[in-house]
Length: 429
Image 1 (spheres, rainbow, N blue to C red):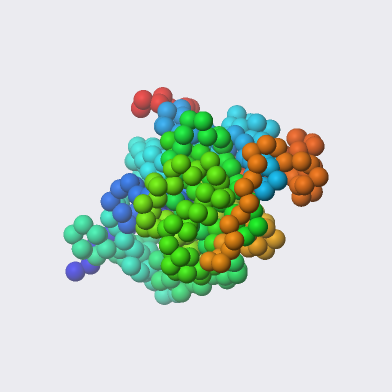
Image 2 (image 1 turned 30 degrees about the vertical axis):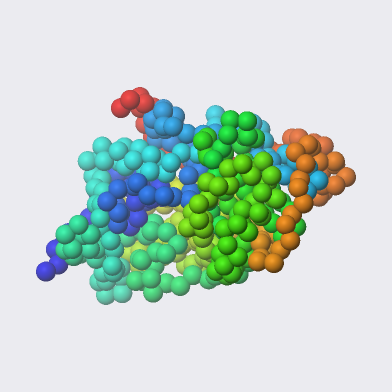
């Protein structure tokens, strides 16, 4: 037996985009139901960066003090270590506004904060353990979703005036709706792992670049979150070379980590991120809108995926809120406006990521037979050894504000609509 339920807007996916969308719509008085397939948010996420644009949004929503009370780490600079020495890449102190940094916070803490704020709204419902298995149709129009309660196994039909898919790059809604994104070739995958951090280690974000090797290390306080690039499809071959070979690579690439590499007890501690870059040609059908990674999967370059998805959610809420408030059917023209608003920023960022893959990263992703890299000095690199963009950034430090702004704010930051803005809530609330 299938249980029948109804809501005005069904949002599939309780990640940052889905919860932000649900919160803003609920503050417009829209009846909104967010479906999250897990029972809680306590899972290992890759994306824990909260960029300056999202920090500003939290301020607008009245959640800034509560976020500031969460345990978090700040990124204020990014550097790159080459075989010839170290160079500055980005200085976030040059950003405009109140947030001249990127915050690193466990994503479950961020999700709990947004969910708590949303659940204070009388028209908001969060369904946990709700796994979407199909979409419903009324003629040629999407009219909701069918979901399975993972707690008791019952199936439910949730009828909705509008369904919004925020369920990531493996979107169940997108697959059920028969939508296929255009994929862009990606030459890299990523090995994702942690290493202990010592008090006398360098701070901030550090990129280590060598011929045939590339690794990014993100300062998470008591550990480094590390992303080691490998050639696409070579995961099994590199694992076959064994843990000792990988430790040798890391010790040669970043020698000051050699005293903690035994923290990698096996290659099971090294997770594969299958890097994808794709985009739907059309983000909507009658009764259905897709945003975030469900509409456009991003590469990890720049760590912008979460914040781009949140910006999608804010733009969608601002455009959809008035149309949904009456409880009626949202015209497809309104859904198209959301895509038009967000498409060019998405295409611009993905274009930059594709360029980075081709020109920089693809040439430095590891293969099984790469020689060990030379040891890089920790002193500043001589200017004449640097590529022209880095050379200019060292000579004219103001230029370090450009990559900082592109990453931390992006080309099209979105602001909360007036109806959703609140005075700051005390941290203890």
